Image 1 (cartoon, rainbow, N blue to C red):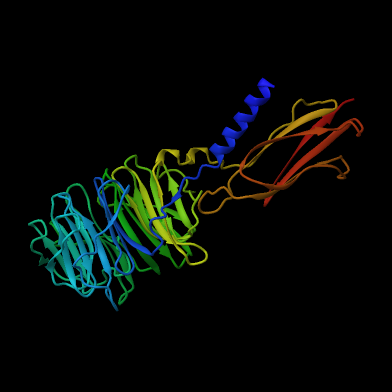
Image 2 (cartoon, rainbow, N blue to C red; image 1 turned 60 degrees about the vertical axis):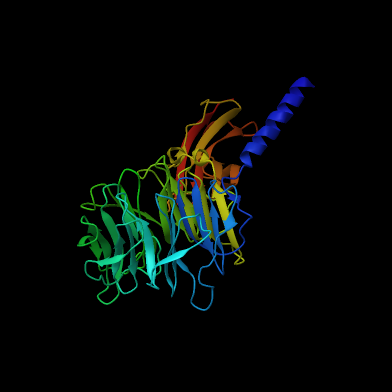
Length: 430
């Protein structure tokens, strides 16, 4: 009885562990979340209508800070948000201008009249930037009190992406651009605070840039969707864009971020892709996630991950995760089929056959089911036993074969899974 109870509680404990979801729904928000910004323990979230929620305790509690800002109406909405290093908050309001708050959103003061200000960012040197739909770039050198246009206008700056303007630890600036007039897309670099720009990656292919990001080690990532290959692309560079490597996957990417441990998260229109190292496979990280199209994602300084999107019934939902270390290890992804030699061999009357089912060979590795058959044949090719005929997840398996009703002799066992097929011989001696 004692051992039965121990076994029962062990099983229950294991089931509870297996049922733990990586993502939890953030039920405080059931509206469309379009923008996130965070710094230290502060987080600000913009939704539709007049929703602008601020937290200074890592998301434990929120308050609506859409105070004395222009009322929402036709064409009015939040284009960009920024929490600066001095904890000032900046909000770009469509058709109205750039506003600043120094009291956690209680009051706002207009700092610039530009009504189409996109991608508010702050460099490591403290300058604050944004660009306009007409291609003008503005910079503030006095903590957002005044903004002045710098350099020449740039054709093709992105309106649809709020993740296309970034700065590295040395103050270098990177911009995505997509010039529809000459079908030119690429990445621009400025090493002089935005006064001059050079192309560091350019293509004329039919590709849609979606986001750019720089991690704490100044590695640059940018994502795009390629219409020519119907696949997502993730480019990365460790030398200011002088050379690039690329990772390809199936989904349409919307944003790429890393946390403090260097784990990489790619938001897509089909969930989240994840890897602990850019050199490993991207795997799905969707346990507990009921949204497929992800529109916004943010990772705070405390490594809390927020993301928002729509589920299959067009309901808006927001999710978070507070435990990035619980994410699966891509090193554990099984990449090859294998059918092992049975043991013992020769055998009488039973033997064990082990086999391995890998992840499907798609552009990224995911834990997908495959139909697997494992059958035994005699030397005339007649089927004498079916050991496996079912859907299997990737993993290592074993099955026992009992030949009690067969004659002694040489037999062949064969596995079939998708396009993979392999057979081995075994000897039954009574």
